[in-house]
Length: 149
Image (cartoon, rainbow, N blue to C red):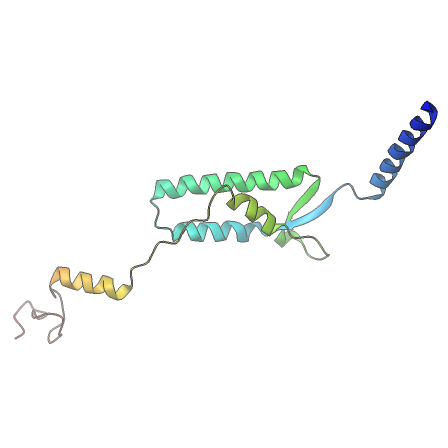
């Protein structure tokens, strides 16, 4: 009975080793690293955050991105940047990495932009039409500083 159990265990071990030796040791995967970084940096630039807050958030994002890529490589997969892949059918893990990173570091929210027209109106109201061209409806002072009316 012990011999049968031992034999079955040996066969299971041998089968596992034979199957593992047939499969490649490393699986190549590709990652659109530049795209992920550009997407985050553009969102950060549009977030309206001050320099210190943006720098801290970007540092945290880069650390989480590095960790996510390291976690993928720990599983025996070789991560190639998308630009390095010339041909072949290599799985793309970009979505998986983005999901892992953005679960720890949220994507920056784009700040509400004030329309240019409103900015110009506020500027003109604050300056009361100073420096407006002669004959312009924007002000009453001419180019030479004389009263245009």
